[in-house]
Length: 119
Image 1: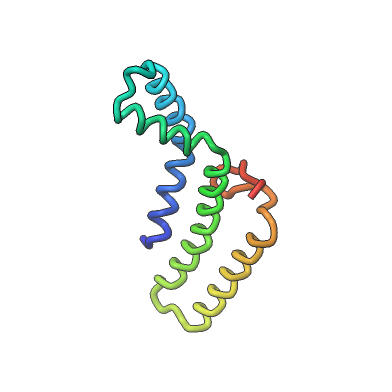
Image 2: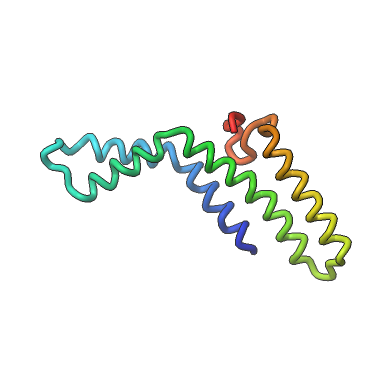
């Protein structure tokens, strides 16, 4: 399994668990009054400030889409008996997909969560 696959699985996990994490951390942050703010509660509040922002989620979805392209490229390179023509055609397909992402969003949104068509 390649590096892109590991990062993609991590990205999928974060996107999948984000709603639960937000609910849990919101509950922790609301349980403590402002006078009782510990370092842990401040860390939770910092997490909430970052991950409540939809822009960060959109960036994570974009990262997931890019990682999918690189995962396919890695799988081609790791095959037994790969030929140089396979490498060039896989590279060309990857570049075309990345250029397509630069020009416009995917029609159905993010490949992972199917919501982020605003990228």
